[in-house]
Length: 285
Image 1: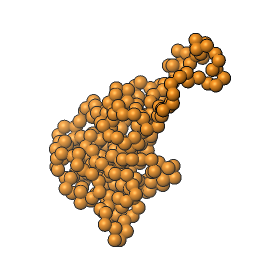
Image 2 (image 1 turned 90 degrees about the vertical axis):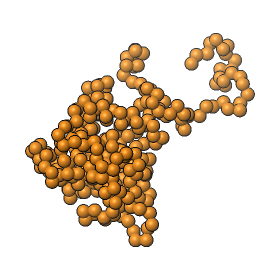
Image 3 (image 1 turned 60 degrees about the vertical axis):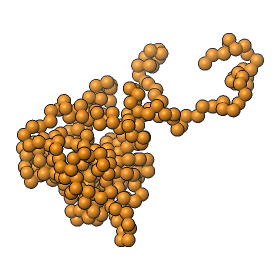
Image 4 (image 1 turned 45 degrees about the horizontal axis):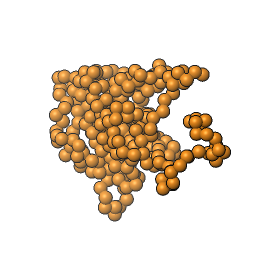
C-alpha cells in the first residue's frame, strides 16, 4: 500500500483531545404509542411533557442491565439529560443508583414515580440537565417542559443550575423550530462538551436532535460509516461515539496517559544498545 493511500484510510489523534460520548434516545413515551403511526397525535395536549410507558420502563431495565454487564457503568463520569420527563426518567433509570433505602439522607435522583420505586443518587455519576439537547422546539405539546420548580421536586439530585428560566420560554405554540436550527443547536451543544473536563459522558436526549445533528457530522465520513452514525435511533437505543477536538476547542492541558521519558537522565544519544557504535548519520527514525 502506498503511503498516500494509508494516510487517506486511517488517521491518528492525541487521546487527550478526544472524548467518548454515549448517546441514548429516551425510552418509549406515551406520545410515541400513537405518534409512531399517526404523526398528528403529537399535537394532542394530553401528551404535554410525555412520560415513558410501562414498556418504556422495561426498555430502561434492559439497557441498565447492558450498561452494567458491559462495564460501561463504571466508565461514565457524567450523565447529561434533556430537561423533559421522558429523558430524565430514562437517564436515572439507566445510569442512576439502586432503589432508595430507608434511612438514607442523600436526596434521590427520582422520587417514587408512576409506580416505580425512588432511584438513589449514591454510587453513580452526577446528572446535569441541559436545555441545548432538548427535542425540536415548538408546536408539539409533548416537547414542552414543566417548570424547573416542578422538576426539582420530582428529580431532587439532578443539577438544574445551567437552566436560566424556571418556566419554558423556548417552546412556543405556533412556530416549530426548523431542521437547520435544530442541527445548529445540536452542533453547538457538542462543541460545548469540550468545556467539560469529563472524558466519558452519557447523553440522554431525543431522536430529532440526534438524527439532524449526527447527519451534519456524518458528511465527512465514508458512506458506510455515515449511515451507521446518522441512522434513526430506536427508543432506548445506546450508541457510543468518539469526539475529536480538531479545532482546539477543549483544554490544552497535558494527557494523563502520556509520559515524557528521559526525565532526570543525563543528556546524550538515546540510541538502542546495539547501535551505539554506529555513526549518528546512519540512524533513522
